[in-house]
Image 1 (cartoon, helix red, strand yellow):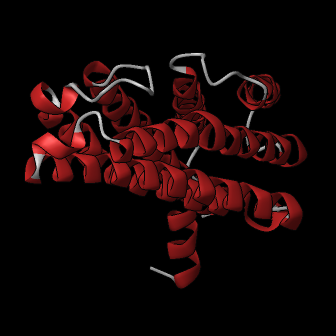
Image 2 (tube, rainbow, N blue to C red):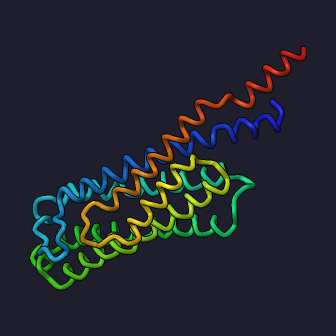
Image 3 (tube, rainbow, N blue to C red):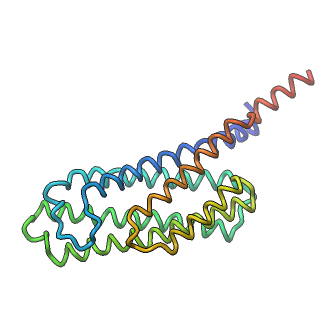
Length: 231
């Protein structure tokens, strides 16, 4: 196979890889957040009774977080590949930076909760109801419900802008992204489950890319057919 054909085939697989990565990210993150929410009360000032009975459920949810992060990184990388030379440097920087900051905050929050579980198992009596637990719990709540959500909104705005400028997504998805991003940017920390809007939007993009990729004819097949026609 010629090197040029190999590169064409690789680029053909890239959109499908983005779709699969986005779907995996959505499933893993939503499952992780659901498991954690199932065990941990929404009140950031609760005393930590869940550590006694539901810490294993939370640990399972936390163990899914790194895999969700890997899938999201793959999703970002393949989307940039789909943009190719049309990528706008300014919005691409905001797109990449906000995505990485979102992941960093997600991982920091997960690490803090994991640290609470380890500390509780080492010395159960001293952690529950302590100032250390209250502070850590409040910090996780603030990171996830203020800063991570805002970075998700910025990521959606950058992605939607790139979609409008390059046409790599349908315009209605881009406008929907703007609307949802504004909801995330100006939402209150008290709106429970608002973060779930972000992976659902990623899922919508992934399904669009997958369907769009399946509808388009393969460039390799088209080239082969053209050669056979000339022969």
